[in-house]
Amino acid sequence: MLIRFTFSAFLFLTFFSAYLPAAAQERTYEPPEFAKKWSKPDVHPDHIVLNLTEDPATSASVTWRTSTKIEKGFAEIAIATAAPKFWRNAKTIEAKTEEMDASKIPDAKVISHYHSVTFQDLVPDTVYAYRVGDGKIWSEWIQFRTASKEPKPFSFLYVGDAQNYVLELWSRLIRQGYQKAPEASFIIHAGDLINNAHNERQWHEWFTAGGWIHSMLPSVPLPGNHEYSQFNRKDKESPRYLSIQWNHQFTLPENGLTDLRETNYFIDYQDTKIIVLDSNRDQDKQAEWLEKVLSENTKKWTIVTYHHPLFSASSGRDSPELRALWKPIFDKYNVDLSLQGHDHSYARGHVAPVEGKNVVSGLNMRDATGTVYVVSVSGGKMYNLRPNGWEDYNETRDRGAENTQLFQVINVNGDTLSYESYTATGELYDAFDIVKNGDGKPNTFVERKQEAIAPRRHDNTIKY
Ligand SMILES: [Fe+2]
Ligand SMILES: [Fe+2]
Image (cartoon, rainbow, N blue to C red; front, side):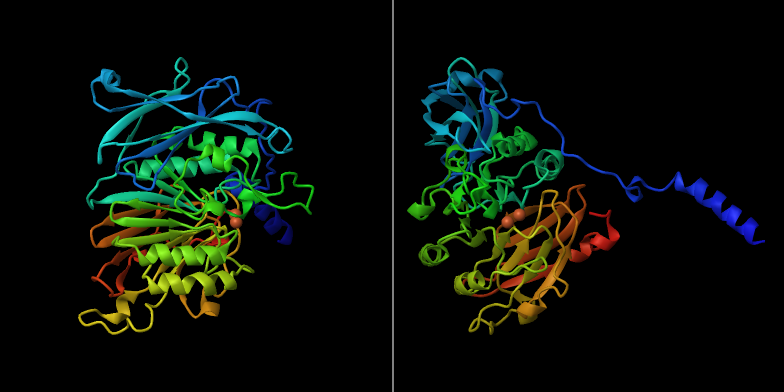
């Protein structure tokens, strides 16, 4: 009897094991090999990236890379029309060309030229076509739309750390994001775009993964801790420097602190102020700068973005000094939304409105909210969520995720900001609205996570 049972069990297992999902089998994974000169610059423009300026209604910046053989760069721009010879109206602008000598940095070993142009005096709310090159070798014509001068509905994307497996796995995420929100006006990259600050191959992965998306969807990048490293990573005693590529390869507003050029800045996009902070350094000086910028702010919506979260998502991580320093300023000036990275998991919660603003006639205070804080991750490295949510902070984490690549689409439409988070496969993972109630009153918070799929954790997803 026992023998017969065992034999049937054996048959059963043999038969069904062939149908077990591949995930249940142990597989090993080696990083892919790329061609030897794969990431090296060439006479053809590459790493073409569009960036927002302080005033995206009338200007836009583009930057690209070539080998040092190209000593002069040019950009051409015209109002785009469906008639193909729109270029008859094009203007040619000579680029600013600068050399990046990273030949002595072990992770880079490259000398390149970076060319940049800021297009000025553009017509608001208009589709432009531009191309870049040396006068003979050109990119394709690439289109983008300037911001409106007046408040007008718009949307943008936000992603957390890309950082690891960038070409292998971040590529699908950024492409799915573009597919979900093709009309998005820009994309915020909340730090840790790559893993090793000065690594040319990793930057080339980032540019290859996003491809032409980077040249037509303007980027709003900020540095994470992984954009700071020793020039030689083996020399642990030497100081950490901002990625040598950063200032060369991006052309960003220079309206922040001088010492933090292109890592601390702001953008006025229609009726929204986007404030970018560099949470890696000079946090006190930025607190003063932030106070000044916010005290002069006339925009309806205020969004801050930086890398290290004030309310951590993952186990064993916290930034109490930063929270003590920056949160009171966000509270004082009613910052609506804070977009963060660093924790390689997902957490979203909102905090109570500040003291003194708690009694407002006509507003149900149970629904009132202070700043909404989000941590998200877009690349392939995953950590564990804090076991008790935000209980240690006496605040409530409303939604969390583990082991899930995500991107966010944020819509700003008059008095309503609608936030949606999507998985790499395009499913709605989280949603809420924030509604304005007029000057000085707290916002109304509208929970919409019930529209989304079930919570994702390590224990209900493919083993990390
Ligand atoms: Fe990270
Ligand atoms: Fe980080």
